[in-house]
Amino acid sequence: MHFRPALAALATIGLALPAMAHDQDEVIMLAGISAAFSAANLVGEPEIVDCTLSGGAQTHCLSLTVRPEPTGYVPGPWCPTSASDGPDVSGIWLHEGRVYDADGSFMGQLATLFDDPAWQMVDPETGKIAVTDTKEKCAAAARPDVGAEYANTCVECLPEYLDPDLTVTYVIPFEPVTAQAPSPTQQAGSGVAFNGIRLDAPAPVDAILGAYTIAPFDDCGGHINLFVGYHYHAATDCIETGADTAEDHAAPVGLAMDGHAIFPALTEDQATAAALDACFGHSSDGLGYHYHAGPAGGNAILGCLTAQYGCVLEKGAETCDASQRRGPPPRD
Ligand SMILES: [Zn+2]
Ligand SMILES: [Zn+2]
Image 1 (cartoon, protein in one colour):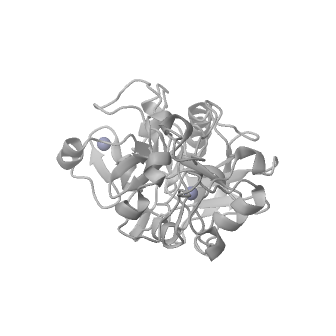
Image 2 (cartoon, helix red, strand yellow; image 1 turned 120 degrees about the horizontal axis):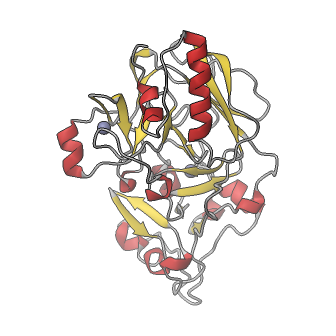
Image 3 (cartoon, rainbow, N blue to C red; image 1 turned 180 degrees about the vertical axis):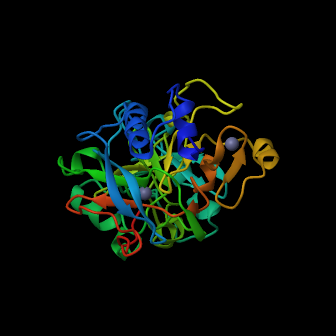
């Protein structure tokens, strides 16, 4: 069997993958992939489907449908409601490479942090913080072109606002196909974690901050919008599996939308030694080409996608043609 980078991810979780003919090989891989996603909130069984990738390649893809909510923990919290709320009842914010506790104290310091007196998230008289506390407000405010009436509002969407039938389908090539040039992650996101949660593109923080809003992430780097449900903008230890290591690498945490495996973040020194490319990928003996998630504070799980990517299909869409597909409107 010729080497396939995505197989390395499966090998590291202890699956023996015998050499077989192409399609049987994919069936075996499918079983391994199903095992890898055993902690995900799967809807039905993963399938092999025909797909057209972003660069026009027609190939076979893994199709995986999930409910976009984690099974291993309860998401949140996100917004503090008063200046005295501490980090235990608040999420985090990512700014210039740092992870901040987005607690009441942080919300009171935004004018200083962003050097802009128009920030006044904490009411100076009551100490209260305005929060999007209904589904309607979350729908209106959890988007980059939020209305001015939401200025100085902390934006959060709660799990109970989600359509109980909301599902997301990932269509990811079994075997990565070379692209003419790397692609930004904005179209299809970065990938999917093995717990079934979307590893998204960077949060559009400039648009969010430009509206004088903050949409914190929980301590796992996730938050909710009504379209894709709970999703990550940072890869944290919440998605590390603690499984066996391979090639001096911790176990992979998910699959990128181009079919390459994503491994946990490296320290700065390790990343320098690994000579990661702009997409945060590199090749190593035994693992082939793979990615390492960016550091949590960087608001980029991947820098870009090296190979042709597949699709994230929201409910109702059936087939993946990433070469034709125009993405959803920008949103957080
Ligand atoms: Zn590596
Ligand atoms: Zn988001």
